Image 1 (cartoon, rainbow, N blue to C red):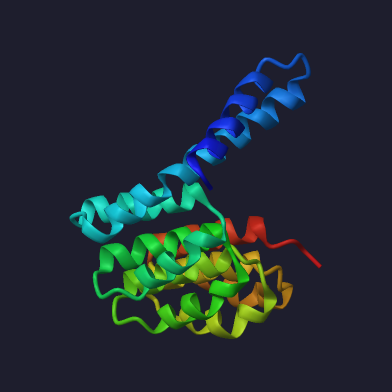
Image 2: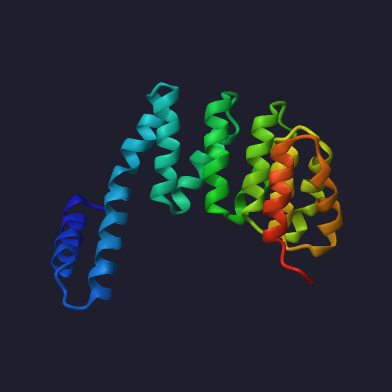
Length: 193
């Protein structure tokens, strides 16, 4: 979008902030914020390319705040990077966005060598609340590590598959408190049949 066109939009939206109707002023504020985010997309992508790891992680989360289809490609790229910090942040943001087109990338991360990355991917997949993901998530409840098993229990509960209730309840006797806490959380999420 040309700078002059962007300026015209912003000017109009700023004037709409003063509208007597709260719905109009609220919509104008939201649109103004989106335009500001779009303007900063180039800066965020530049930071993602040239920044140090901490700056790149911040840039990944900034992409999530910007939203839209244009951020998916850089996030998918970051999820495939070898640096665990970048990978984890990208998986986290992709999970929050829950765009079906990114499912293959998140499923692929379930086989990552790092259990922390696996746990992030499990949690991200839980945000899709999709019963078709049960076969991918179910093996992790056997992990017994208090990390991937805990995330899997909650993600499985989010699918709404009540047939899993007994499997989830069995983990209530786990020696790991994080797993037991996840079971308690999952039982509150899982809606009875």
